[in-house]
Amino acid sequence: MGVISRLTSYFLLPISNLYNPKSPYLCDQTERRKLEEIKALVQKEIRLEWRQRYALNGMLLYVVSTVIICYLSFNLQRNQLNKATWNALFWIILLFTSVSAIAKSFVQERPGRLLYYYTLASPQGIILAKILYNAGLMLILSGLGFGFYALVMGNPVEDGLLFVGNVLLGAVGFSSTLTMIAGIAAKAQNNGTLMAVLSFPVVLPMLLMLIKISKNALDGLDRSASQDEVVTLLAINAIVLALSYILFPYLWRS
Amino acid sequence: MSTKLSWWKWLCVAMLAYVVTAGFLLGVPRQPILNETVRNLYFHVPMWFAMLFILAASVVYSVKYLRHPSPALDDKAVSTAHVGILFGVLGIVTGSLWAKFTWGDWWINDPKLNGSAVGLLIYFAYLVLRDSFEDEQQRGRIAAVYNIFAFAALIPLLIVLPRLTDSLHPGNGGNPGFKVYDVDYRMILVFYPAVVGWILLSVWIAELNVRLRRVSRALDEATAERPATGEEVKRQV
Picture 1 (spheres, rainbow over the protein chains, first blue to last red):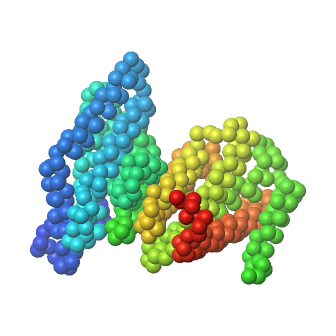
Picture 2 (picture 1 turned 30 degrees about the horizontal axis):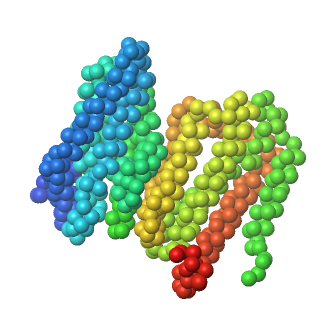
Picture 3 (picture 1 turned 30 degrees about the vertical axis):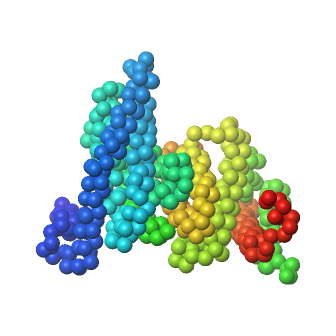
């Protein structure tokens, strides 16, 4: 127990002190400037989204209408809808929502303005801010999606905490993978198709893990049964984040 | 230009000739369901080794390209990716044949099989991505970025995920894998040369592909530089 608390204080204290300007852990000036840059960029994204509210409302409506389509399509057999189908349907809805929500994260802004950001901020700051912002957006969308889906399709989840945690992991994972892919697809001409073609196979390992964990949560299995999957999911997330961080500057330059 | 082949190409020819003859003629252990199909080990498994090898080479060229962009490096990256796709398709075809005779169906719902199919989808998407750019430099850079991304997605699909779930495929989901003591020494005598031989063949094909691209690039530049002939002008009008 002592080892664990020492470890957590060692790793978590610096994180909790990130935004504290007097933090002893952040004596490096450039590090702090980077964090402030990310903060400013995230705020910019949120403000931009709030000004063009039609995009946000459009995405919310997208989730709701997809759920309604599923509900009406399964209308006759609602009672026969088994857990596996419920689960697969839920994740397919979330996947399509996130692809269409994140696809616009680079096309929404005009090329001239992107060039302007290029002169102001570092590419690493931009990709991290986009990923963070998209993760937040996905959290809202998937939260709303889950609520509405459970309302109309019934809620067979037995281990609620694991399920919600899994949805959170999924939102962060989708946003980190799809933001990078959206950056790639935005450079090409036939954007919409390319986004789907590039992202579906890449996001699939993550989706399979998510479906597996949420099936475990649906069946109320012991938490230890999902341990391997959670670790793999975190590892995939870490790889994708690291790659985005390293590769985005090259993408940005063109 | 001399027509002499380098030593490793002779080695490749010799090894593959040995693998094909010895693979079909030498004795193999009698296994209940496998029977004679066990000889597919010399073809199916090395295909994946060669694919991973050549795709890893492609990633190396992509990284090099991002550091110092040049058309030659882009040629190498895309040629190796093409050959990787070819070997992946061959791996799926040989695997499908094997599945038909041992598991009873051309395709079964198995994580290893599905993973390899999705892995190929990722690389087909790479080809589509390349074709959607006009500008050569932009195409090279963005394709290189996606290539590195794709390889990182391929590794969990082929190597990590199948080991986490139940799988019929040997070496996964608790099944006995391909281990040295499982395999008869007669098979090892053919299997290792097969791995080396097929990898060398993949390198050889990639090299030819690179040269073909270099020639067609030079031809393109030559036609672009010289004034159009009367025939071409007439055709354009």
